[in-house]
Amino acid sequence: MNILVIDGMGGGLGKSVVESLREHLPDVHITAVGTNSLATSAMLKAGADVGATGENAVVYNTKQADVIIGAMGILLANAMYGEISPKMALAIGESTAQKMLIPIGKCSLTIVGLTQKPLAAYIDELAQKLILTKDEKSV
Image (tube, rainbow, N blue to C red):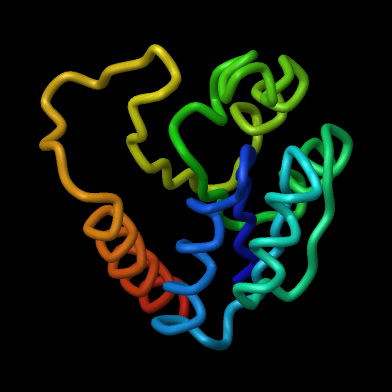
């Protein structure tokens, strides 16, 4: 399973996701793509297998991924204070990969009906769903 983790800003969300994935699914391949080098570096230090940075890296790697993980803003052009370009949002949205988005409310998007949880709780839930997804595919 090839998991693509996309993050921007300081890479804190992506770092936490990669650490959780390494703990719960140590054998998956994790590609970390940051919208900037700081985010990529944080995810690589957390244990991602490979990393790349920038718009073209996002566009290219969405075609290789089985699962894409990031904040819900990665689907919105100009989210993350403009770090998500329209090309990035389009590539992520058009990818056939399963998208697992974490509801971070800093992108002018609210999904009604979601229960507010601490970030760590969302990341734990994401890891559990990935474990189930991986088990289903290996049957």
